[in-house]
Image (cartoon, rainbow, N blue to C red; front, side, top):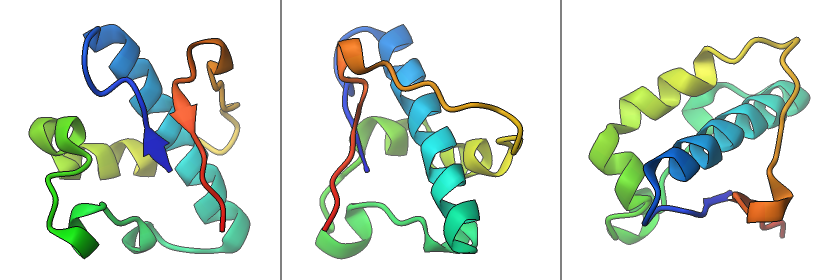
Length: 88
């Protein structure tokens, strides 16, 4: 899952990041996976990616995922392309 909006407006980035956390939590629940399955691009490439999330704290982002309540609906702001989903 790619979090777009990593440059520019901080509020847009925070919304995109929150959307990603909700979507990831939904996928983890759907597949019965633990949060330990969530990885950064950095883990494979060594590239500082996702750079803004890493700058703000990877553990902080993982905690955002853990704090998602199952009853919360995911809101993806497609109009602003806040969340890009890649499937294989």
